[in-house]
Image (cartoon, rainbow, N blue to C red):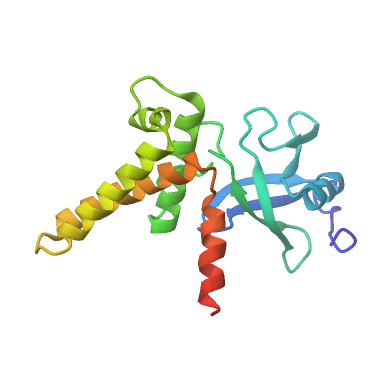
Length: 201
């Protein structure tokens, strides 16, 4: 890939579109020069060339919100890159999951990704009054208990005609499940990989 890339069109850099490896959400656009691409491929974390700072920078070097790279694919002209990655927290400096805002077309995958990022951020920063922080402080056993309670409530709701109740209980269960995964340091990518492996069976 290094040999085939055309860095000459844009004075030594190529645009790199970063897409969430599991949801397909476009997270950000950066630029890579040859050294940045080389480091990205070897370190498996996204490294870019900052045109404003005139230096290399690794996404997350100050925030800790790294981009774990799954794949890097050049376009047909070898002058742009598609980077599939799994973010460790919000990607945008505004705290949003995507630099393109939160008003992207809604999908279950992108919504779960955004919710997971919020849970991760609250677990890290521990804002006062946060229910997520309260759960984390109570520990894995309590979170697991809540997952069990919500699963039972969903099972009961599903036996009745009120679809709205079933939707609400499903949302409660999914939220508590994501909190449990964060408490156990299990990434959504691991669940996606397991599901993909089962789809081949």
